Amino acid sequence: MPPLEAWEKVYISDEDFVDNMHYQQACTACHGGAGGVASKEEAHVGLVQDPSSDPQSTCATCHGDIVETASTSLHYAINGYETVLQARGADFGDPQMAEAFTNHCTSCHTTCGQCHVSRPTFTGGGLIAGHTFKKVASIKDTCLACHGGRTGPEYQGKNEGVEGDVHWMKGGMPCISCHQVEEFHGDGTVYAHRYADAEAPACTDCHPDVVGGADGVPQHAIHGEKLACQVCHSAGDYKNCYSCHVGKDEDGLPYRQLEPSVMDFKIGLNPYKSEDRPYDYVLLRHVPVTSDIFDFYGEDLLPDFDAVPTWKYATPHNIQRVTTQNSDCANCHGNAELFLTADDVLPEELEANQAVIVPEVPAGP
Image 1 (cartoon, rainbow, N blue to C red):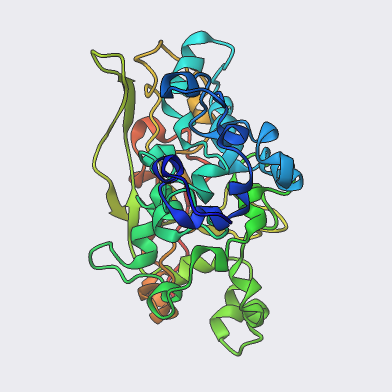
Image 2 (tube, helix red, strand yellow):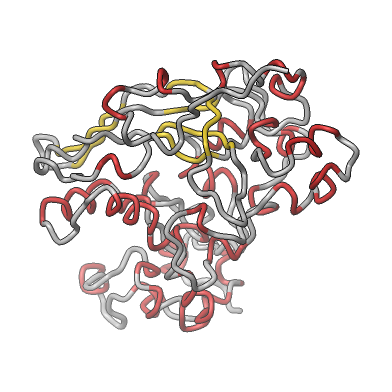
């Protein structure tokens, strides 16, 4: 490869890029614009900052199989947001609802480039390492750029008074050790939400001997499939958010207004009971949705708000082998503080959470 010309150093900014296969194409192959012109203004006509915003015309040239499945992935298609809002009665054919969704929900959509080249737009963007394409995305710049509000502090032990996840604290295990690439790129199936995927990681993938108590632990034999692993092995309280209101400021820029998160731990009934998730009890996390969240855009945009719980199925990433819950039977059995009962639920949300509220706390030993 010949040495970089002066103009190439300006626009590429890192010489390592010349060793990357993506350098073999002209800039215009991905970014558009105009070649063979003399001025910056002419060259930038039609420029596309994030070429992978239309992956079929860029990334698919070489990665067609990945692009085909990625278009259905939750990261790209944000199906979870759409399905839950539709379940609450959102009508995306309504211009008011459509504007609210575009302004405040689609920022969690991500593209190929926002994982493999830059930080996600949601966090302000910016190239991670010049134009170097990262095959394996980094925890700091990619995963926790979006998931650093709740999952990151749980996993890395940054919530005050709560241990981090043993997989991180003992070995620095990266996210991709459990969350395989098929989860990010999708498998071609349009899933309604992240817990609808039967292939999602499970503790038993690495610890199969806990099933039925084959490892000799009596609690595993006694509880069987009654409890999700996190119920006993979550190290402690995790973040819950109770309110989010959205709108536009005086300059027309969208904003979110959230109340401070609350650290809490609640066991509830499993809203997604299935062959893959047969548990009676799971951990629940309160999500920051309210019936009037979109009132800035129009009244009653979520007319069926009560159709979906505000306390949602949760899998906190703060796993430890020994926890308060499993150190003594009495710490769970008969302990109403740990279970989501009607007294824990806001009056205006009681109807929405009937499916997850525990009607009777399991008796003490």
